[in-house]
Amino acid sequence: MTHQTHAYHMVNPSPWPLTGALSAFLLTSGLIMWFHFYYTLLLIAGLLASTMTMFQWWRDVVREGTYQGHHTAPVQKGLRYGMVLFIISEVFFFAGFFWAFYHSSLAPTPQTGGQWPPTGILPLDPMEVPLLNTAVLLASGVTITWAHHSLMEADRKESTQALLMTIALGTYFTYLQLSEYSETSFTISDGIYGSTFFMSTGFHGLHVIIGTTFLTTCYFRQQLYHFTSNHHFGFEAAAWYWHFVDVVWLFLYISIYWWGS
Amino acid sequence: MAAFTISQNLLRHAFNLPFSFFSLQGLKPVVPTEAPPIIFATPTKLTSDSTVYDYAGKNRVPELQKFFQKADGVPIYLKRGLPDQMLYRTTMALTVGGTIYCLIALYMAAQPKK
Image (cartoon, rainbow over all chains, first blue to last red; front, side, top):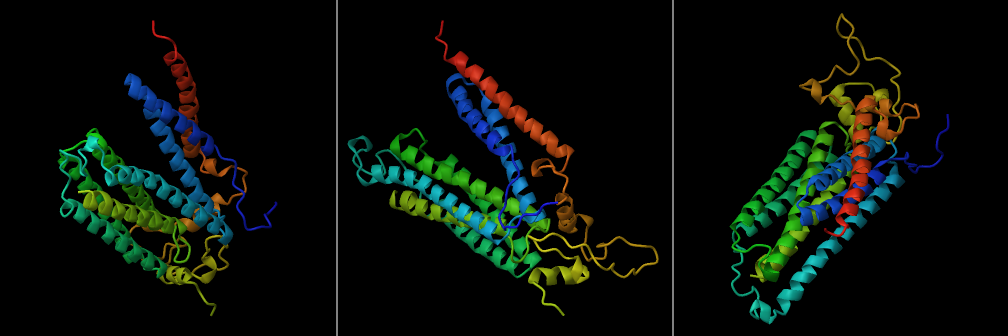
């Protein structure tokens, strides 16, 4: 029987990169078929295939790390670099939408009535639900830090409680934001204001849902004893992502909701 | 007494088991060198002597570590056998089949309208 004489992870050949790429193809052509021909089958197949790929790929990462012990210190360092680089790429993704917002709002054109908010647009009051949303996400940043410290101190009960509170706050944010969406007097088609507002806050909301899902996965893994007090990178990655989501909201709130109203 | 990590201490005190039973992440699990003392007249299972309040809360990580480290040549994505195979086949069928269908649909959509 041969054993490796290095600390790195030589991954088994896996079908998930291929199925992931093919699902992306199904998603994009599915969107085209839906937009042009009102045909949804391809899109549904793409969504299903990409969800199954993600589930199985990340399930395998847990098996390789927690059950097979492949996540040694150098491997974990690589995973940390990977998560940091991914979050940086997401920062650039949001930077594009903020660019669009500032481009239009700093120098309003005659098409907007020479003002921002444009003529006829009634923005949401930043001191009402948006301010509550800010408080909710800031509180969730506190609870996830609490959960992390409890985890590092091997306090199982408190880390579980704090993690559940974080998930609850994230869900509450999503619920509040959805109710705000039904309260707006403007839609995504209402000029540049509607476009920038809903594209920015919409993608942010999607990231809150993704972050909440990641945290929920961490909750189940915690219940299954996957995390130890000094090795729990999956949890740390979820916490980093969650803080990123919180910071994006702060920028959104200050730029679009407050300055832009 | 050897110095224990926090996680080892936690597990030791929660489950009252000897040091040799514990495996740290990143290391292969060590087979216990001594059995825990039999307290009851009838033989009991290993690790059942704990204070968890329901069976579903038992820590199954050590046995799962042993299971997934079996040197049977099966790749990680199929290691659990039948459920893994079903998921794999469904995903492949959906993606490969969907791609073929998609290429046909795109070809048809590119035809000039009559």
